[in-house]
Amino acid sequence: SQQGEEDPQALSIQEGENATMNCSYKTSINNLQWYRQNSGRGLVHLILIRSNEREKHSGRLRVTLDTSKKSSSLLITASRAADTASYFCATASGDSWGKLQFGAGTQVVVTP
Amino acid sequence: NAGVMQNPRHLVRRRGQEARLRCSPMKGHSHVYWYRQLPEEGLKFMVYLQKENIIDESGMPKERFSAEFPKEGPSILRIQQVVRGDSAAYFCASSQQQGAGADTQYFGPGTRLTVL
Image (cartoon, rainbow over all chains, first blue to last red; front, side, top):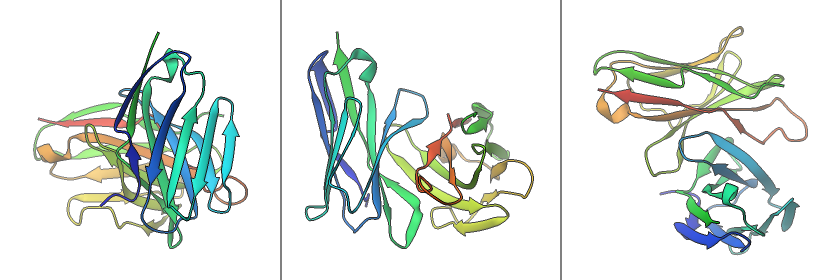
């Protein structure tokens, strides 16, 4: 079974709205990373949040981490059409920190 | 500073042939990771290598797949006697040796393998 699972599977919003997606995981982690993938392209690293951190910001992105609930959220504020992509969370765990475990992703469509 | 480079970007092979996928990590990175992505799915870890060493190959199929990261040159993922089920996008990532940011993995554009 996958370590990280994103929710929802798909999200459709209009430009200017906020987009929120969640990631749940099963085992304790060292860090959690969010990536974006445009259709047919490689992954772009967005944010890394460590297990002792609760919130991080990067531009229009805000990531939270709740280790007690084993969950993380990614918020994209004031979305743009260029934010249309799939978003994946990936976790790194203690004994295999080099091995990222990915969820199936959230497909976000932002319409003008 | 160039990012992670992968070639070829697209590779077509017939069943039974061999596929060789190459990955050059970012400058200053000595850790390389290979992942496979099937359509509409997330990435699945295959193998983690440092120069001349395999650190974790827990995601590699037991047969037909091998990976190396020689002292000189790119990392190679080799698939022998390909089958249709090997058709997927194969992504390489790299990270720094140590220090701040060492656990951030940066991904290449991927190689899309199609087996006819």
